[in-house]
Image (tube, rainbow, N blue to C red; front, top):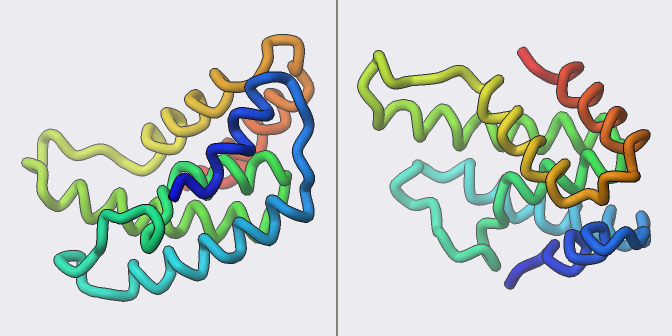
Length: 131
C-alpha cells in the first residue's frame, strides 16, 4: 500500500491536502513503523503496508509543520539510517544530516515552484532538527 502517494500526488499538482486526514494517516503509519524498528533489523519487513517508508513519514510531518510528528519521523529515519551505515565500510559512512537533506530535497522537488513560503518553512524545519 502506498499510504501517502495520494497526498504527494495532490501537492505535486499544487493542491492542498486535508491536514486532519494526513495526521491520522501519519499516526497509523508511525505506529506501524515503530513496531517494526523495535524488532531486530533482520526481522524488518520490507512490505510498505507493514513498514511504511520513512521518507514518506518525514515528508508528511514536514507538510503538516508538526514538530512532534517531525521528531518521531526523524527518530525513525535515524534508526534506519544507522542500520544502513553499519553495513558500510567506515570510510563510506555518513551522518544523518546528508540523508535528511536528500529526503527534504525530494519533497521540495514535488512542490510547485511558486510555493516558496512552504519550501522555506520546510528548509527551516529540517535545519532545526538536524543534529
